[in-house]
Image 1: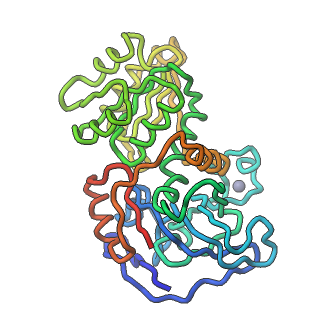
Image 2: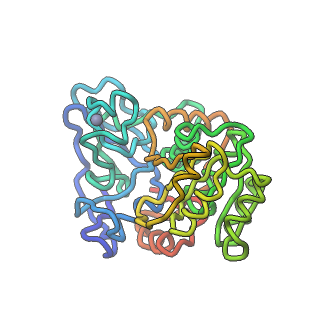
Image 3: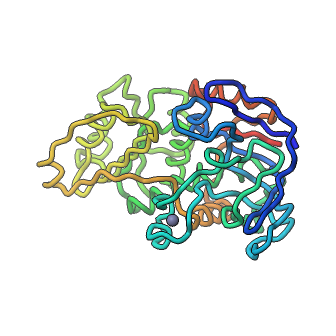
Length: 342
Ligand SMILES: [Zn+2]
């Protein structure tokens, strides 16, 4: 089979001819139809997060099961599937209370074991999630593949931060791959959405999606604009995909009573200051939200199948063009998601 392999960070992919993996006990193998290309996996390419090299990256897959190992009873050959990104033990406290991304012995698909930039993928059977019947994965393999992260991660934020209808929610970095989907899912949840981005093109996309307010912090004061768009009351929720010291500080400062701030940039180590007195007085929260649960992926697939939301894939490439798409991801040129179609 063809596989695009990364041998070390910062180096081009190498197209290799490998044996099709065989399913061992409690594993399954699937033929990959498409695999999303997001910023998370670009962090592995660029070496910003630790990964096991050589590695086949990619986890946002649309695939069909071709082989199951002994002990697998949740899948059969021919099942259309996507993948859950985290490798978990299924048995620790965090797995048991449906907070799988906090698992005590976690790994990730495409980072610690080989992922979807190949013609076939082998995973623990419980990492494959069956697609609902009414999702046309043959016609839209790229769009269906990205649901497992691009829709499911924002969907989890809605649940985790308990975003309610008519709450004022600001999304900073709203034009990025996860940002536009956060805008989409937050609108679906009935909130009043303020999109913040420094790219006017990307703000235009948020406008098309229906965001109620648009803010470009290069042109106006972020804190004052956030206060304005919440009628001076302060934001109920801020989801920050940029996480610079200044977006975090302006964000926390502009929270209203009961406000929640979610820093969502996985590689930011920006430091910031906040006023404890204000936090106490208004019962504000700063809270992390890490990927999603398997149930969030299942719910997100259902959400798309019901026609409530539709993932935005603006660029599609062949496996051989992986370097091209990752160059564009690194430069921040991709709107929504890009995907490899195999
Ligand atoms: Zn666990």
